[in-house]
Picture 1 (cartoon, one colour):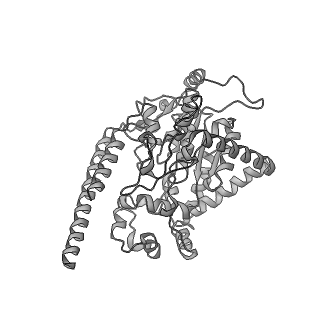
Picture 2 (cartoon, one colour):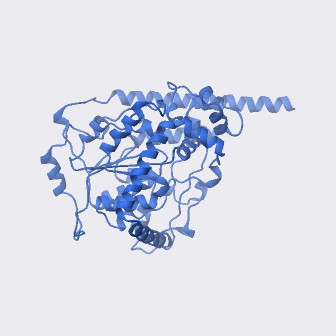
Picture 3 (tube, helix red, strand yellow):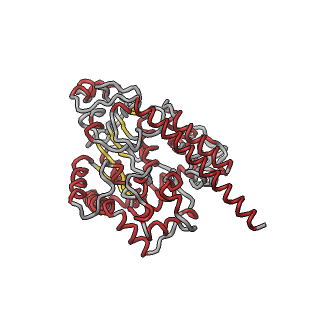
Length: 424
């Protein structure tokens, strides 16, 4: 009887592995086919957003009737959306601001990212023609400043967000490990601990999707994610980023980050109201011991140096803004967010994916599980607030669709992964 059970488990595991390999190869084939259709345009001065077009773009923007005396709102923004850093919540803020002011987004075509993990190219933008100008670029990409700069007016503000590399690594490992074949041979219930205790045993830089397992921030910014922390190129890369980005937010201090964002862009408190999107249920978060945390820091040493540098610059910005002033603004943001929660959200908080009643508000889930929380909109919501509530609660994929982005490849991937794992 026991041998029969073992054979059944082995058969199930084999069937699941075969299906997953088939899925991976199909998606790689589709990805390669789409990549070959791109026109790879680099280095031409004619590609750059010309000043005349930038001025024309500004004329077509819906501006507020009253602006703060000392400044006017910024409409040209590049947000470098990093992975597993609360960036989806920032994205929702940008979508709402852009839609409100009729701004022009540079969107991907067929998917929700710019052919990540390939380096960004202008030709990856939907319907791009050399010389086109945009107000906002904000979807996932592997950053290339030279290419991104071609899309935006010269006064565009560049923003990104970082997260403690240990927390980011834990989140990335949990979210992506089923999409990284390197992790499939890790035994035991605690795969994360097994990996950190002997990372070189399970890691290969050339392996499919291996970048999710080491210095993911560095990889997102277009750098070599396999550099050791003491490599001189790491600090050179950090200094280059310092020149490119006007503001670097920190996920651990999200509210303070939004206040600095508001101040930098001359936006209003209303513009930065938010609900936390794409959050995991707490039971799915691995609690790392101090020993494992140290190993995770060492393994992601380049990202740790990156984070330390910009965490220091972040707090220098807070000091310049004023600690007392910051505290008052954070308290006001919390008060306004609490008001919106009471108006918009059924029972006032996030729920498990299976308890979300309207699929419009169901967030994208990782392969093989449903650990990402979402929300239910209040049934008897005041009609004055229905639109803003729904927009604040709409996940990235659904919001992109509402903004007119074709997501056929993303949706095909979603259908395939959900179908495969519902059968196993």
